[in-house]
Image (cartoon, rainbow, N blue to C red; front, side, top):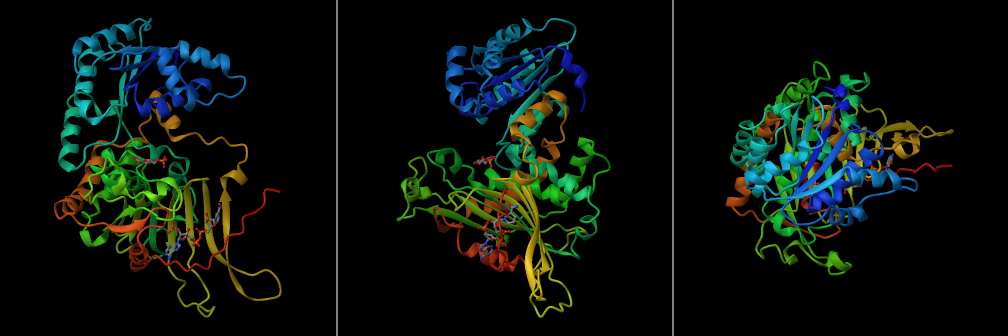
Length: 494
Ligand SMILES: NC(=O)C1=CN([C@@H]2O[C@H](COP(=O)(O)OP(=O)(O)OC[C@H]3O[C@@H](n4cnc5c(N)ncnc54)[C@H](OP(=O)(O)O)[C@@H]3O)[C@@H](O)[C@H]2O)C=CC1
Ligand SMILES: O=C1O[C@H](COP(=O)(O)O)[C@@H](O)[C@H](O)[C@H]1O
């Protein structure tokens, strides 16, 4: 943590794009929760900025249904909105930012005042906004930090262009690139699980681990957002960022210290051992409607009116990645993600090798460590045990750390809450550094280009299914064994 001492000074949090979807659904609720829980500096002002001519009352009204208010919080909420303001202005005219600057300055009494700019704006105005912040709005008596949201470009070239643009305006310590998966409880737990447990360290390697599956599944399709999605696809939307970030935390070497740059150095190092993905190691799919489904389920991706009828954009993908270093050589890391599937789930499955010299006549099953990111955080280790009683049979069972049962009182914060608070405290550990981004695009750009120039046709899968049938074969050929024999007995809360 850089600077809790800073908390005594005035802070201004400027939300650019305050009239948009992300602002009302995510950012206003998040800053309210942080404010409600007294986690922010006492003297923090919030300013919404966007082109839309509206009042603060309008902002309040639009975000109302997304803001949770517990009984007794009403006066605090009133106080929160009193600390808010809304300024309307263009994204491209310096004069409007000069006005914004004057507005911010009004509440900046004293020798030090800090400013945070959250860019909840589309990529098309990104350059204008950052140039204008730099020219007219930086703090002259404190820090200025900018939070940016993906997409960070759509390939290596556009991302590099964006990075050089930003580097010309701000120092890397001022730039907070959000990958909200880095704010999730179990993703943050990965380093603790790996490096604070001697039991895992000696086996976390190619000698013991057969394969690692990192999955993201969503039970809904693009639902009218297809226009945006179609120019990106699931590989850019989820795999190149969220899943690759998880991979780097699972695979990296132990950092020298917990210093954010030591951690990010290790993440970059492990990414550098990965070659660009070969087309033969990528499988893509696109959902089609389920004729027997209800409502949305009946519709396929191509039925979305905002999607071109001949689109070959993947809504599902499996990529098999190899890390060419001494720890992981030959171990498949399988990244798998998709929309319009049978369930919502994000998890990591570390599958251990078969027991050598099995004396149990082939009845042993592989150990599997499952780190469930969502829904319902859990960590469980599937293992073999003698079945209780007179018999000497083997059974598949688990050591189970289900958060809702073990930590009943714990309040797991939302990813955005953690990350925005990190920006106030100046902690960049859970943000993406420029060179990480560069490596991520190096790994994915060639295969994305191939998919697009060759117009590779995605495999169809039905809305609400587990994805294309061929995906399981890909898992199997990548040494991920599924037996279907494991049964979990959910413990009762009593
Ligand atoms: N603490 C907890 O909350 C615990 C919960 N459980 C629950 O018990 C249930 C079973 O545990 P789990 O570890 O998932 O057990 P399994 O090893 O049986 O895995 C089941 C998962 O395997 C996948 N699968 C199905 N068919 C295939 C196939 N042909 N090839 C490859 N993969 C396949 C499916 O997920 P997919 O569609 O993603 O491929 C399925 O959900 C889960 O619902 C789990 O959440 C278990 C232990 C602890
Ligand atoms: O970044 C994205 O993530 C969301 C899923 O986030 P989650 O926290 O709900 O798991 C996904 O729906 C969206 O397409 C993608 O851009």
